[in-house]
Amino acid sequence: MKKYLLPLIWTLILLALGGCSPLRIDPTGAGPTDDAADVTKSAPAERGGMGADNGAQAADVGAAGVGDPLFPQSGNGGYDVQHYDLTLSWDDASGAIEGVTVIAAVATQPLAQFNLDLSGLEIDDITVNDAPAEFSRNGSELTIRLADTDALATDEPFSIAVAYHGKPQPIEFALLDEIGWLDYRGGVVVVSEPDGAASWYPVNDHPSDKASYHFTVTVPKPYVVAANGDATAPVAQGDMLTYEFDAPAPMASYLVTISIGDFWIQEEPGPDGVLISNYFAEGLSSSLLGAFDKQAEMLAVFTQAFGPYPFDVAGAIVIDSPISFALETQTRVIYGPFMTGEVVVAHELAHQWFGDSVTPASWEDIWLNEGFATYGELLWTVHEDGEESGQQMVHQWYQARANEDRLGLAEPPGVVSPASMFNRVVYERGALTLHALRMTVGDDLFFQILQTYAHRFAYGNASTADFIAVSEEISGQQLDDLFNAWLYEDPLPDIPEAGLFRADFQ
Ligand code: ARG
Ligand code: ZN
Image 1 (tube, rainbow, N blue to C red):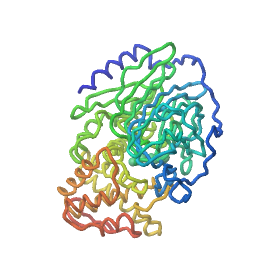
Image 2: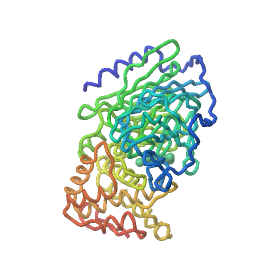
Image 3: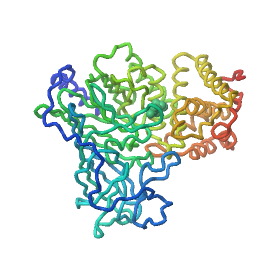
Image 4: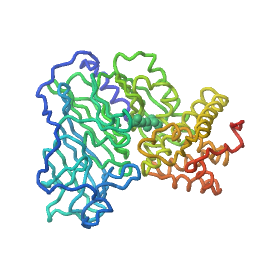
């Protein structure tokens, strides 16, 4: 409850400041708009492929990627980020930002050189432990070279400060999809899954390196900023407003958001002292927002199924821009205006346990996010509408997959590419995998498995092997065959016929 009063008070202050007025004050001091790629400033340009296959790589050079099977260049080796302190200002006329990112990290090997991920934008200055460092750029790889006397030892904590500016450009992802910093008429939204975070700040952009965050974001009046975590009252200076957010729980970079827009804020107490705080774009029809009234009840249902809600704040950011999806940004989920149905909201809240608190170790394990969140849709549907509706839901998932199977289009959800990682099969056959597990081990053990997994890997990362190991440990059964058939093999298996939801799955 400690965090409850302060946001309420600043909501009132904000209203008094006219934060919801449609008037836009002319921005002053327009920032630079040069978004051309940086030229190499000092160190010789790095060629790509600093990874393990680069035989010439020195022992004190961090790898340019963590070797993710789907996104080999995402993230970097040699260090572990603890905290990001992001300070930036946004100019609504030019769309440019000016920022300083301060990163607290620990070296995991001797380091004379390491990389961050940053796409576009212009770097003004980089220091490491307050000493100027050389840098060069190659695509979205930013290489930082330390002076010999400044090299880092294994386990040594260090800080990196990057000052930069420019107009962030979205990153192309798959078909027709843009991710990262999206500047639309009326505001900005950041939706980065899987690798869009590098579009707006220098980052170790892979889910395996989670860190806490602090945001200080300055925007022209009367824009409102919504980011992850706990908000404090905005501070006005001249025509500008500065908003701060603190997100102390470890967070993967694809779950980081700041949204800038014309929002009104709605707050209510949720279960167990969790604050529910929603940011709704002004002017959206209230008929689009009804499902958010059920968030407290959803959190209660999922707390019973999965264990305690992992964060101290929960809620929604509903933007007035036609993004065609919702994204489970940590503590505050981004919704496009037509993605606000009850089942979607249940899905995104279930992600707070599975995806946000327990994050996949690699993108290959995306079913650990989407299959579990889709299973949340089923739990909510059963809670709201009864078992028969749940039964129908399972049936629909199964029939859609069976139809694909007949057409020779079956794709197991554990085998994915960047182009297929958000296909329905990952969501629905992923959820069916959990349902098959439930039918096999029974309700008691099934929920004990989910809770043990959520608790053991809370605030960290887990792989499919970790989940299978927990399932076998709790059930005392050998489950490789079940998981192999559901996750990795082509033909769609039969649903085990036992217990709840037994039906004719022909
Ligand atoms: N993780 C999101 C969800 O299931 C989906 C994100 C889709 N991403 C995209 N770039 N289309 O809620
Ligand atoms: Zn999802």
